[in-house]
Image (tube, rainbow, N blue to C red):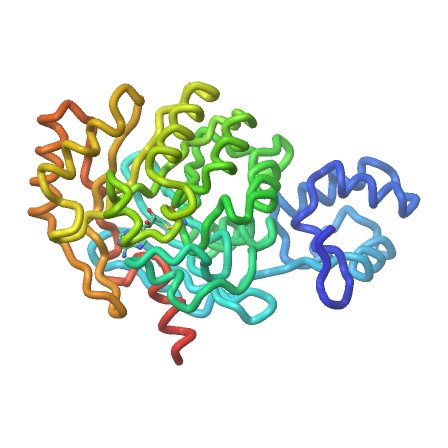
Length: 348
Ligand code: SAH
């Protein structure tokens, strides 16, 4: 069970049955657990004192046993060109993470972080440059939703696990977050409205497949052969392209869910017709969708691309019979790409 240094239990990271066990062990009635769970996850109170139908003496006891974490908004950047809002949050231990709220035609989508920093070392990604600090707790993932909805006054209808960190490298906490998020008596979000993006941790993809959660798996592929992929993604030396695509095929067989492939286009690296052809052969017969993203410039690296190159690559793929779209770049005026804001904060 998750505790702070003062050994209090992180109450927002508890599933309802875990909370119930503790409440019963305190000699209280079972219905109190549901009351508290709903204060936390439906009404989303920030203080035990706000739980007005809980007797005051019991609220005092709760404060002795549990901690109720919160996130502090350090920076809030709002895009001038679209409704994207980017938050830089401070965690209770002083670390920083980013969360991005995006306005899509079908509703608001929230991009949340799963770790402080990242171990994966992808060359083009700002989240990984200063390395990895720690995993986020389930509460800290939930709070990104709760605080972003509260602060913006906007309702989030879908979540993408595409912020800082590698979600499958924080597997247990991410799964717990998903169980609390989708619990009927909590936020009750269908996991069909959740996408999980991974750089390709093959054994975890297989484990996830077996759980048949209904979420969309998004694979950061970015190159169709081992040589090119290893140059930009060290994880490819652990699980190569063929192992990865085999795991994706297995995921589709187990879940029936179409896979989404992310392809960050980099000038002269992965944007030729030959690369498109290799990609189409690699993914042959696998129900999938390819998302082309002109690589976002980060100041530490000299990678670039353009909308024009993305259109050209898309037409190669379409001609080859593939299903490919160009990702709308949201919030480009506010550094909305992964990890850039946190980097600036840490550099201060
Ligand atoms: N670790 C996970 C999720 C976080 S990264 C993963 O690798 O999928 C989220 C997405 O942003 C990934 O597809 C990642 O490759 C991409 N990304 C990171 N930096 C980028 C950049 N500078 N330009 C374009 N895409 C980038």
